Image (cartoon, rainbow, N blue to C red; front, top):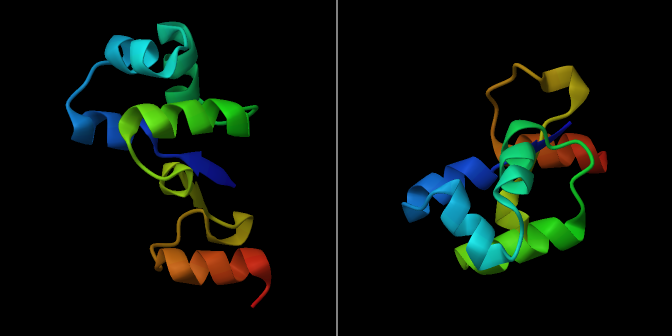
Amino acid sequence: MFISRVREFRLKAGISQSELAIRANLSQSHISAVELDSKGVTLATLSKISVALKICVYDLTYYKCEQHLTCEKSEKHHLNCYTGK
């Protein structure tokens, strides 16, 4: 399961959805949709947002395997689940 971290980084940057939308050349409704539901988010959109937030696009994503949706183990653990290691 892909989990978007856009809201987390936007709040850390201290900016509104509207400000992020302007910086990323996206609509505020698009930013809202990305923050609420990560399904269907394209890499192009995440790339625009990461540039606007001045972070790596990888930082905007987090993967939790279906088996561990409520698991609090480390990101490395979940990455290993994803890659099969």
